[in-house]
Image 1: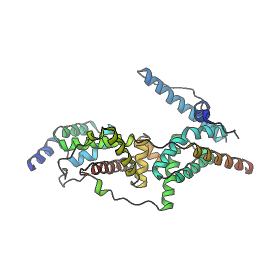
Image 2: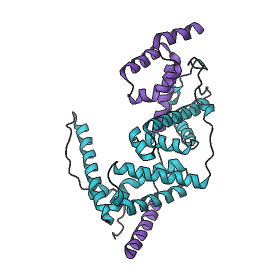
Image 3: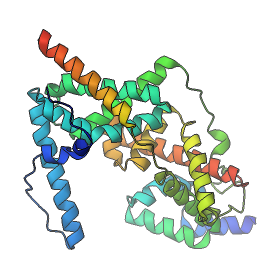
Image 4: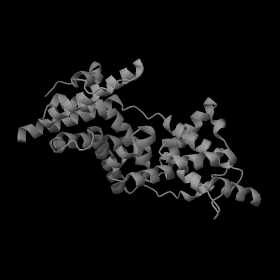
Length: 238
Length: 94
């Protein structure tokens, strides 16, 4: 067992994750080259740490915990909305990682597996708590006539009104609250996409949905959020 | 107004609803070239869809700018303590 290493080891993951870049695609700019190098190092280091984790290496486990727990905490917190539940979920996720690392076959990225464990644990907690209230999206979705044209016209372009800082902050607060009203799976999809930057394919792998279902849920969730902003600004959701 | 609607449909092969349904793929740049051309063509003559697209993009941008809270240090330590303790028990048993 490793002694707990304090703050300077917050970022010790990089050191623990030894890296050997290979198969580099030559980027056209120095910055792109640096980014590519960093990605290569992370990927190689991650793969090395996962292999060591499979043998029960505690140091590798803690390196992975240090690397991923902040991200996974944010994902779980966004889905659950409560810090206490989030702590339990992250605890369960990493205990599962410790016990089940051997069964990770590398068919998807390791990070995707972690996201999947986190989303499943968070959604399971919501199901068990039965606290989630179903929100009707309909009121906040755009409406169209039978011939496919906008029902409410003109559609107001309020995008420029969010440029002011205080408005932006107000809208961020509003959106954070609106995120909490999304159906749990829709919330998971939008958190993984718009907040974590995962691709549709990675989200599909993490949630067990098809790519088409991810796109549908993402679009509907964004429309709902857009409608919330529009209504808050005094316009039609359409 | 009715005449304008007919014109929009006739000129672009896409209705506003179809445009709204394609927005996600348009932003991901995953539309087929012909569909993308129709999409852009529709935007040139339909200010409602331009407004819809701008507000959709702004919603995504604002969502992306929401900063999640950092994991508190005491939470991190609690979890690590728990995991170390469970791992130790596991090894003792195992």
